[in-house]
Amino acid sequence: MQISKDELDAGRVLAGFDGETALDASTTDSLREALAELGEHYDRVIIDFSNVRFLDSSALGAFVALLRKLNQKGGSLRLAALRPGVKMIFEVTRLDRVFSSADTVDEAIASAAAAS
Amino acid sequence: MPAEQRHFEGGLDQMGDARDWLEQRLHAEAVGSAERDAVLLAFTEAYTNVLRHAYRGLLPAPLDIELCISSTEVVIVLRDEGEHFQPQSTAAPDPEDLAEGGYGLFLIEALMDEVSYTPGGDVGTVLRLRKQRARLCA
Image (cartoon, rainbow over all chains, first blue to last red; front, side):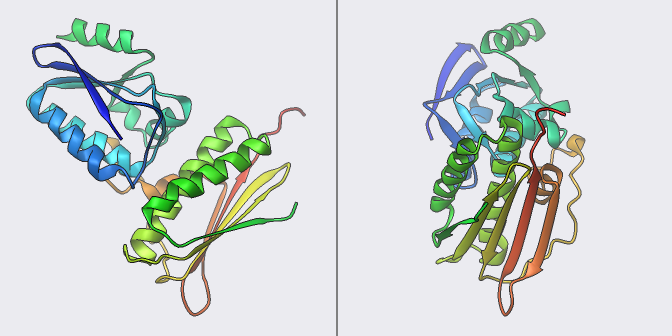
C-alpha cells in the first residue's frame, strides 16, 4: 500500500492511494502509520478514495483515528470519490454522519477551500 | 448447486486471496453488485475474526470455506479449528463516539440475512452466512 501526497497549500494536503488498493486487516498497521503522519503534519486533509476497491472495519478504524486527531486540532478531513462498496461501510456504521465526503476530488477540494 | 470448497492455513496474508476467489465466484454467478459488496465485506470481517479470536493470531490457522451460490441466495460456511467463538454483543458503536473498533460483528449481522455460530465439535466454530439475492423481476 502506497500513499501519495500533494500539498495544496500550507497545512492542506490531498492524499491518495497508488494503484488499485484493498484496505483490510493485513494493511492496517501501515495504513495507520501513514494516516498518523498526515495527521501530524497537516490540519486539513483530503483523501482520494478513487483507487480503493475494498475497505473493511480495521481500515475504517484507521480513518476514524485520523478524524479524531484532526478534530482535536481544529482541522478537517474530507473523503472523495468513494466507490459504492466502500461508501457502504460508512453508511451501514452510520459514520457517514461524522465524515465529510464528496463525489469527486475537485468537489472535495472546493468545499475544503470554501470552509477555510 | 453443488458447494465449492477451499482450504486456507495462512493468516492475514491469505485473506486477500480468499476474498479474490470469492469475488470471482460471485462475478461468475452474476450476483448483483450490492449483494456482492455486502458478502465480500461480511466475509472479510468473519475471516479476520477467526484469525483474531479463534486462533488469537497464531499460525497455522486452518480454515475451510464452503460456498454455495444459487439463484436465490449466497451461503458461505467457515469452519475453523481454533477456540470456540460465540459473540455476546453485535451492537454498533455510536458514530458520535468515533470508536476506532467494534464494528466487525455488527457489520456481519447487518449485511447478511442470516448469521449463525455453532460449535465445530471438539474444537472450533462453524460460522454460516447467508445472503438473499435480489430479485430482478416480479
